[in-house]
Image (tube, rainbow, N blue to C red; front, side, top):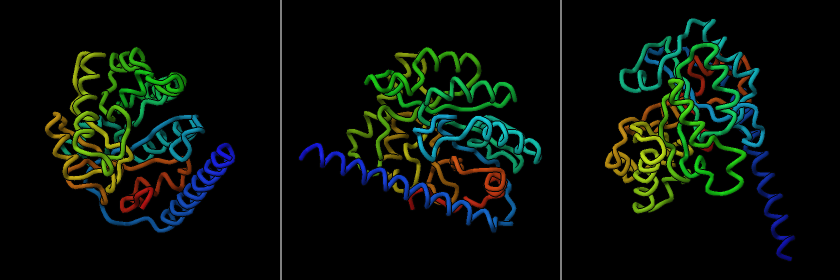
Length: 266
């Protein structure tokens, strides 16, 4: 009976995943049909997760499409700058920055090579327990500390994405402190520095609270990145989420602000 219950629960979970993906596909197609015409006077920070790793679901972008998106951005007059430039100064309307969350292995093996080819500066937000391979399954999925160090030496900015990727809308202050301060201690131990940049796990308005913001400031973070433009929590830095569905048409709409009022799970 227990095995049957597990199979049933897995089946329900898969159905929910497929429904959520279908919803996202149609939402992004629909919003791209009538992109906004409002002018934008600041830069835009893009949020990616993995390249050619289908198991990450809607977060994954194919390598060919990722390359096409970089070229499309350049062809439409954009230029790539570090995320901290936009975070601290706002940037200009033609400036874009690229960030990656989680530390998936494909970021090292695929994305880094493409970004280096186009001389694009970028930022990686690391979940420290995942990169420490605390469990065996993490070894095949996430960049280890040696890989992160090699990216640092290549000029990539490294930031924190917590220790275990929790939902800050659901955890208590003690856990918040451990995830935020503990992550910085992990970086100091492994790489000899404590990052000033932090990306909120899940990244949406419901995943960040006033106590979490206070804990992040206390921990020493200067830049706190969310995953929505206009619906992000107060005091956070806007980013635009890129999905596996973002073909040329959708990516152009994205650059024009079609998804600035959009959140993945709202």
